[in-house]
Length: 481
Image 1 (tube, rainbow, N blue to C red):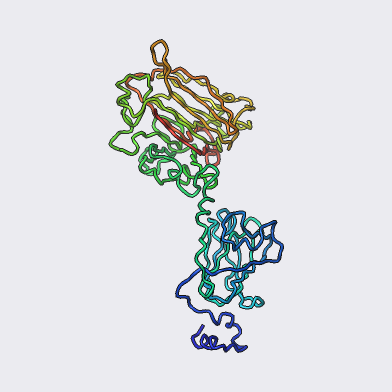
Image 2: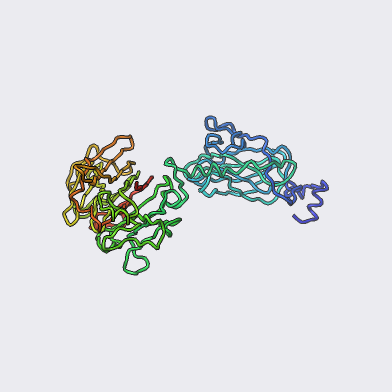
């Protein structure tokens, strides 16, 4: 407004010719922006259940304290009690972290004639905390927030609305709801949905192998434990935006490790915890502080190792397995392992055939230099197995425990492999303990490490862009007594 007109307005000169600007005639620049009190809120009375208009100005960001009214152009009328200089509005929407909501804002000095001061606007869809929208300074006592629904429906659901500017109605800040919004980002599994995996899981003793060779050095990409902190990959290793789970995605056709023809997005235990002066492994099989051994191994090996015996616990859901390719490979993914120098004391499989509703769980035990021995835990691993009635569905949450201990028999320690599956309803399925004393791992030139993630066992699918393996972990812990 030109200074001459502002002076006329302040002097009370509001001729008809100036009526278009007189609604904001007393508005002035604020030396300091403060929150302005909202004394009353009302609407047309057609609000949902108990979610009345007064809840939008009660200072609470609790989801149960909101104004909800269905329909485009539903208006929330706000009264500041006296004319104030308004410079902005703040809105916090119910489920504002899941969807964008639209509105426009009008102001009035008398409650009868309203002027639009903020054209149609939309929230960001990323938070339930206050989002602020600036307006040109205007004198106003009444505000009319006109709801335009959200991108999913015509519901207008406001947790809180706040006014900002200066005048006699200045109040101390009632907060922007960011603490409650933070809680919105914590899933039912106690995981943050807005942080990389290492912020939800202790990954200081893990590195990850990915199914790609992005640097073109002829090797699969591996992110070591120090670099893994704060790191994620939008294709193969990331935080699920709804559950906060740690997602592993393995797409067939990618790069593989030297001794495998199958791709993986999989963590490898690194007991050294980022101390790169300790090598990942000693290739002749001598244990070091980055790996562990069985308690049935010689004392000399135990002294060199980073731990003796161990337990791997995980809570997870298999979201997808391959459905195309060779019958002997389709639908298989390894979700947990103990790897030795060359062989694997256990590979824990989930397998769901394309025509079955549920999947099976089994494991392979690979004695040194010998063929695999397969143990069914739930259902049947075979290529044409019938649907296991007690099987585990895709997206069903369950837990596994892989544990190595020793039992003394006739003065000799027998290394024992224990595998337990716990269903989401608490049902426990425990495989018969497996005696590994004849498997060849209890000597001074072998070592162990855990692995967990999605290790695809199908390299024959013809549509890897859509036909891949994906596993989401909600808990993961490796311990060594």
